[in-house]
Amino acid sequence: MAEYLRGKRILTTRPTMHADTWSALLRTAGAEVDCIPMLAINPLVEVSALQAIKNRILDFDQTDIAIFVSQNAVRYGVDWLEAYWPQLPLGPRYYAIGAATAKALLARGIPCERSGESMNSEDLLALPSLRQVAGQHVLIFRGAGGRTLIGDTLLERGAQVKYCELYQRSLPTGAADQLQDYAFTPDAITVHSGETLANLHRCIEQSGCERLLHPPLVGPSARVAKQARALGFTEIHTALNAGDSAMLEALSQALV
Image 1 (tube, rainbow, N blue to C red):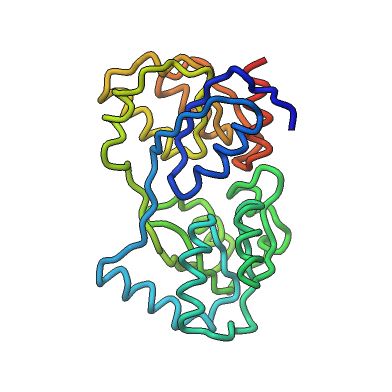
Image 2 (cartoon, one colour):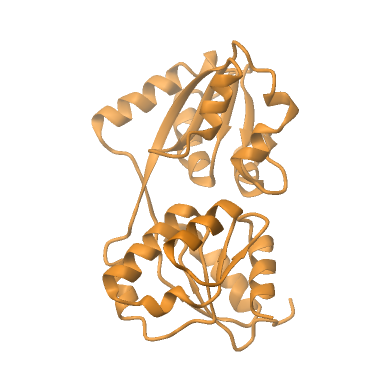
C-alpha cells in the first residue's frame, strides 16, 4: 500500500476489540495513529437478560429469518447458539448487515445474505428476499437498545419480530480524561458509528477540547454526517460504509 497518509496524525475512536486492525491499516498507509476508544462493548450479564437470551435461543428452531446487525452480534449470538444447538436447525435463513458481519458468520460456518454497498439497515431491507415476509418469524441479534428500523419495517411487512439482545454499548471509563490529556490537534478523526460520535462529542464537552470539533471528521454514513453537523463538527466527510476500504478512501479524500 502506498504511504499516502505519511505525515498525517489520525485520531481513531473504535472500541478496543476492533481498533487494532483499523490502526494497523492506517499505519501501513504512513499515518501516526492515536487511539482513544469512545465505545465499549460488553456482554449482558444480568440474570434477567441472560434468561431472555436463553429463551430466544431455545426457540430458535421456530425462526424463519435470523438477522445479525454486527460482528459483535455474531460473536455473542453464535456462541449462544452453539451452546444449545450443536447442529443448527435447518429452517432459518441468515442475514448480515455489512461485509464484515457476513464474513464473521461465514467464519462460524453460517452462509448468509448481506446488505448492499452502503452496508446499513436500509440496504438490508431492500433485499428482495425480505420484501415478502408476512407471517414469518424474525429474530434480530443485536445490542441492547439498538436501532429499530429493521424490526419496525419487517413488522409493517407482516412479519413477527423478536430481538435477541446480547451486549451493551457504553462510554469507556476514563475516556474524557484521556481526551483531556490528548495534546495534539489531529489531521483527521475517524468515527465508525453514531453512538461513537455522540460519546466523542460528550467527551469533548466534558474535557473542554472544543478544538477537536474542527479537524476533518470521517464517518460511515449520511445519517452519522447529519448527526455530526447537528453536534457542531465543522468539516465532515462521509464514507460509503463503515468498512475499512471505504473509510480509508474517505479519509484520503478528506486529507487531499
